[in-house]
Length: 228
Image (cartoon, rainbow, N blue to C red; front, side):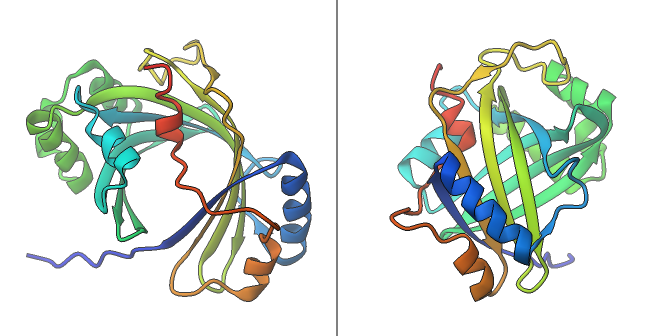
């Protein structure tokens, strides 16, 4: 069996003010590059998260379980020509992500509970989600939508993002439907995320520093579950 080399990454999250965003954004523009996939410096992300009836993923996040995972399907800027199924894992505060591409039909089938095809898909993440939909009873739970401004810095493979305008689809799980009503997820603010591999260059550390700001364990999925 081929050994899978898992690349865990470091991650910081800070909740910041709008004035903080303006200052940090200006600093980053001087030292980092905007993500080339962003349009006008930003993009809209819509994800569908999975959980079971006991809210396993939600409870593990809230309780700070040291080893946990969650599954989601995601696409960008309303463009369904490229849809990703992603598994995010956490271990000792470090994160790793595994992904596979889905067609529109495959994504819609998962939402509709038509999952038999997943077993023989030949994609490990798809097959793993299928297994956990069977024995953990994972199911589509909540749509999470927000705007992201991303910056990249090659040394250290650093990625810095601002996430804001976080919205939830409440009980709607038809995330491919552009008409699904989205509402603000409570009073969620602006989230600054910094991710890197082995080291975080001082130039980025200095650029994102804000006096008095502390690291937070913020989860957009948990925030979007505030209504149920």
